[in-house]
Image (cartoon, rainbow, N blue to C red):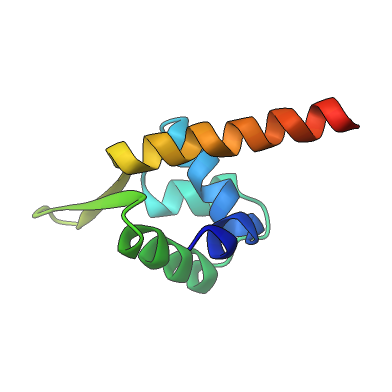
Length: 91
């Protein structure tokens, strides 16, 4: 799981944006240059299956879906922050 998330630039970008409050798929796609709908949907499903994100669907017209970090996802982000800090210190 860790290798799949950390080794994927799209997963990392999605997590960073969700953390900043960009929680709807359309907004993610607009805010992450180069991210296609297909790849975004695949990565969101993976992140939900790993328990890093949770998906909330609202019974509205048009349908509204939002993603949020789970408590595990918050802890995972702390680890990613530490990795980024270590990388910055070594350069």
